[in-house]
Image 1: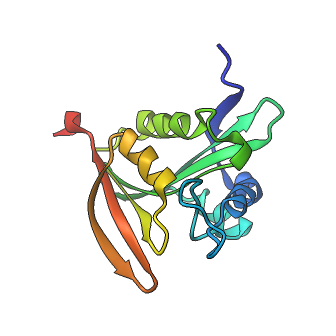
Image 2 (image 1 turned 90 degrees about the vertical axis):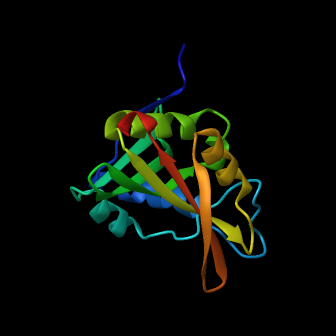
Length: 163
C-alpha cells in the first residue's frame, strides 16, 4: 500500500523547503489555533541549511511523489544516546496522512535514542495538536518552564530497552 510520500534524510539543499513548511505553520499571536498546531521559532532557509550540514544534527524530510516537501523533523544530539527534538512541521494540507508519525518512527529507527526531549508551548496558547501527537508517541510531560511571555511544557521519551 502506498503512503503517497517518501522519507529521506534532509541536507543543506533542503533549507528553503523546510523554511517554507515552517513559515506555513508559524505561530501568529491572535490567529494561531492550538488544535491545528504551530511552530514558534521559524528560522531562515540559510540557517536550516547550515544546521542540516552539522554532524550533531539529524533531520528528515517527507516528500510527495513529485518531490514536494510535505513535512520535516529535526533533532540535535545532546549527549551519548540523548537527543533534543527541535522541530517537526507538517504542511497543513498534508496533515492526517501519517507524515508526522512516519517521520517520528524513522527518527527512532535511525537514532535509537535512549532519551529524547522536546518543548511544546503551553501558554499563551496550548499547542494541543503537538501535545496530543507526542503523548500518542510515548512521550510524557515532565514539567514546565517559563520563558518571557511563554510557558513551555517539557516532554521526554525514554526507551526502556536502553536501561
